[in-house]
Image (tube, rainbow, N blue to C red; front, top):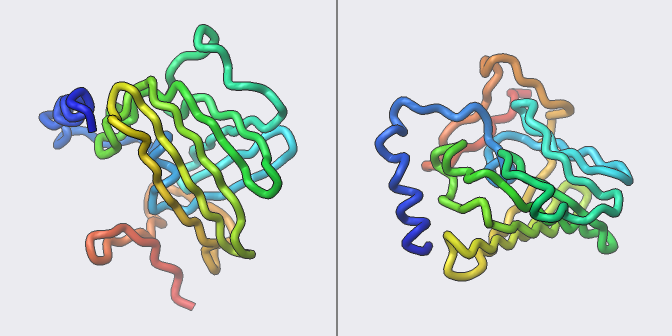
Amino acid sequence: WTEEAKRRQAEPAGTRGGRRADGWGFPMMMDAATPLQFMITPEETMIVNAYGEVRHVYTDGRSVPAEEDRWPTTWGESVGRWEGGTLVIETVSVRNPNRYFFSSPPLSEQARYVERLRMTGADRIESVMTITDPVALSAPWVVNLVYERAKGLDRLIHDDYDNDRSVVEGGVFTIVPDEE
């Protein structure tokens, strides 16, 4: 982390106790304990989490909008393309995720995210996300993620947190399957 990133991380520390996140936002959604659902069409891939949040990845041939035509949002602007069986997603203009979800990295709105997602089996997607940020990072940050199909979970249901099956095991959030 650069000195600016360290400052950004320390800035909200005094307000964390009374603050709660209203969702995940990007990039946290892609590394959360909650299940994800991928819906793929030729024009768009939508990634939906258990909280009903939808990430839109446009795969209709458009380019990332010019800087003057975009503004930072919680989800940023994501444009994808297929390279064989790999979905390559470029995301820009993500509002500082540290302001939205307090435990996220102190990345800036200048961060650029490139993800490469590919199926590596019938029930497994592997993702390599490379993040560059001239404000917060001194070098590119590469994050490897794996998504495995949840057995016995055929749809995402969110109903006021009363069906939350996430628990902490060994300091890590996990999803506990229903008893069969």
